[in-house]
Amino acid sequence: MHEIHPLALFRLSVLGPLLSRERLVHGELKRLVREQAARLYDIPGSRRAHISEKTIEAWLYAYRRDGLDGLLPKPRTARGHSKIPAELQVAILAAKRANPRRSIRALRELLERSGTVARGQLSRSAIHRLLQAHGLSRPSGGPSEPEEYRSFEAEHAGAIWYGDVMHAPALGGLRRKLYLVSLMDDASRLITHSAFCLGETALDVEGVLKQAVLKRGLPNKLVIDNGAAYRAKTLQGICARLGIQLVYCRPYAPEGKGKLERWHRTLRDGFLSELDAARVHELGDLNARLWAWIEVLYHHMPHGGLNGTPPLARYQRDLAHIRPLGALAARLDALFHHRITRTVRKDGTVAYQGERFEVPYELAGRSVVLVVDPHRAQVVGVEDADGTSLGAATPLDVLANATRKRRKPGPSERSGAPADPLNAVELAYREYHGLCVDNTAPEKTR
Image (cartoon, rainbow, N blue to C red; front, side, top):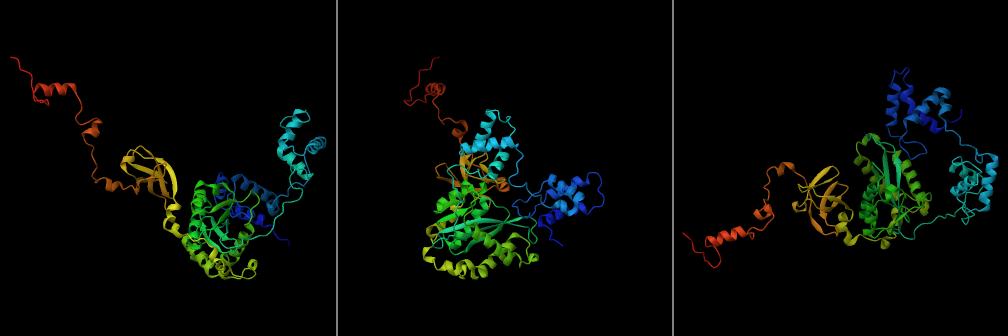
């Protein structure tokens, strides 16, 4: 009996709640499909976690029609086959060969202007597949041979760290998909820090980076993915303040990922396969066991890529090359703070992450820069645009404010005018009643 394709088995597991019902009442199918689409999945061969309702319905009808064979992945159209008419293929290939620097857009515009094809009839993807099938998709002047890649590693520990994220299923009592964020030292394969997170955002990377530099000092370079989530200005600013050169992998060329992917395989085989999920009730339980496994087992394992040297032993050989935090350690928390612009409300408060914080009342109505600790979701202070501190921020306590004595403005503050204004009527009155400076009064008439 041939082995069943893992993707077909996965799709069948998704359809399980639908297939287990012998008869479905009106509207029940839609409800079940909607419930299945709302879940998170560990999809084989994919980094996605969601499946659309339309896709689940298509799988269901395919299974009802063809059984398990209907859930097999469909083979792609044979390479080189094109739906473009033969005469038009000849024209496209001739135009490309005449000027290899012509882009797909330029080719399509040329054929449309010349009347060879109606406007909008040719798709970019169809032209691309045709050129690719004939080896003409490379731009002129590009490399005639595949780009050369070579295995390499940094000369010393601390020179280069790599960061990557591994998607993991829900574990133990955690009912959400998890993401393992890891930072690895290139030369020693030492995991400077790793943690399971509920997301794969720049903030998650920042949290792991903070713990890594506390434990292992400062790297010269940090190489991470080119995704939009990691291009946050906050992460760039933190690396700049720490003197770390932040490098993004080129799209589709993730240098250094091979070492981290090998680490992920080791983690799956050595940690996830041995984990007693019944003991994991919250994220802290899981990470505590992860850190113990890394420090006690992984860092002391003989590493094939290091000629049998354990990662920790290789790292310790280069301690003289590691950049310590030094004076930065005392203000590390401040270096990881975020700064966002807000307008202070009339009651002297600002809002952040759904919470309100009190700042000096004199700032009411002003636009200020909030200094926030994103990991605790707290505002710790306010600054002006130049970075000068304008005071502290404290969580709003509405109960305490009910009995707190308020500062009352004086007469001049209430009126907005000097306490003893220059007034012609008052001067005349004072003069008439002998209140002038020279104490002279006009003679009264009868």
